[in-house]
Length: 301
Ligand SMILES: [Zn+2]
Ligand SMILES: [Zn+2]
Image 1 (cartoon, rainbow, N blue to C red):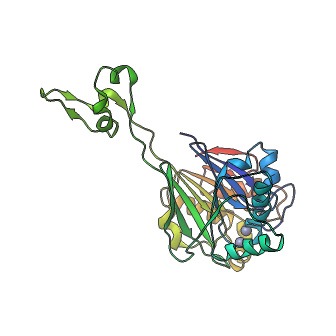
Image 2: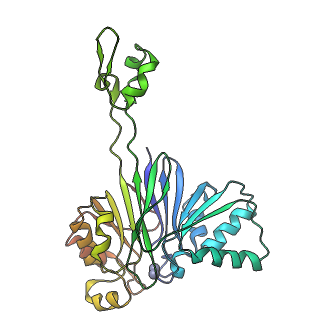
Image 3: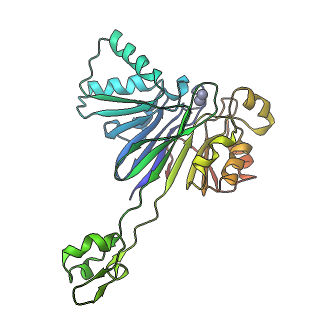
């Protein structure tokens, strides 16, 4: 099953050095989930040949502009482009008021249904679920209420081996696909292992947008496969990071290490860094399997 994320923006605060504010597009089993929507997200989707129309779910971490100033433009374009299918948006409660006032004064009556689900910014909870995955909030520690999101794939059923399955009654398929063995009326056993191959292990992707290093959210991200974590500053600016409730690249590496994640992506780079290699090396000094969240890159999760 496809499970990948494309980075659309990884700059903090302002667009600079051709870097755009935060946005990511997650594709799970050909369903598209937009994570944050900084200014310029529409342009980035066009640039990387990703269809905005395919997005059905949007998750907004917090109300600093670099994480949602692109949202009203994206929603308006969807309206102008004739969208009719509903859109689900998850974000801080006040986001709805902001959107409504923009629609009100532009006299926009959306052609599609917009379903808004306010996030609880004080307790981690499952906010979305379908047959492919579930999404749980991560309670981050930022200057204003902020949640990250962890996308966890569900365990898939075993796959039938067609040639073998053809030799038995379809009535047994359901149990075999669940990994259960079946006893026939004559006492003969059909072993799930003989008729199916196990599904891939479910994978998880945790997105930690803006936050101070804070152990309280570690249990939610523990052992995840891929962790995206902000790394706004180098560690020589730790004081500045603490003041602004951000993380350094070194801390991001430590967080990945402490929580036994498989892979770390770092982003949300300060505008003071024209090149990013130093940030990468700093994170890698504690957690080797780190990569930069470079715009346009797609990571298999
Ligand atoms: Zn930010
Ligand atoms: Zn912020």
